Image (tube, rainbow, N blue to C red; front, side, top):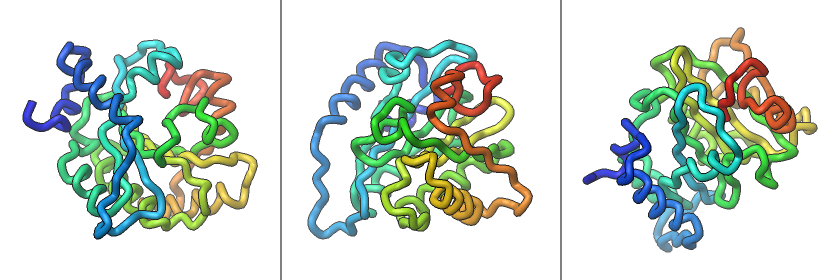
Length: 220
C-alpha cells in the first residue's frame, strides 16, 4: 500500500488493515513535535477514521478499537501535509466517518471532555459533504467560532441517503455558547436561512445509544 490514506476508500477487516491500525494506534501516545518555523495553531488536533457495517450493533469497547488514528498536527504546515493526501469524504464508503478532535479528546460520548456536552447536527444532501467538511475544518483551525475552549471537535458521517456533519462542544447547558456555535456553523457552511439544525446532548445519545435520532440503529 503506497498511500495509507487510499486504504480508507475501501476499508474492510483484512489482516493488512488490522496491522496498519495497530501501527496507527501506537502513534496515539507519541508526542507531537512542531517544527520551530511552522505556523502554530492555537490547538493541536488528531484526525480519526472509523467505519462499521450497516445495522451492526457496536459496543463502547469495539467502537474505541475501531477508531483509526490517521495523524496529528499542531501547525498549518502539518495540517496540509495530512489533508492534501487524504481521501475526500464523498469518496468514502457508506457508514464511514472522519473525526477531527483536539489532542487529548477522543470522539466518544463517554470522554471526560465530552460527557457534559452535545453536538449540533447538520444533514446534507449527497454530493456536498466534501466542500462543507473542508469549510468547517478550516473554520475550526482558524478559531472562527470564537467560543474559547468550548469546541471539542467535529465529525463528518457518510451514510446511504444523506451525509451528516456534527460539531461537538463541552457544555450543553451553556445556551449562549451553543447558539453562537450554531450561528457560526450556518455561516461557514453557507447554509440557507431556513436550514434546520438539531442539537443533541451526549447524555441523550448514551440513553438511546444513538448519535443522530431516537430511531437510529446505533450510529455513533
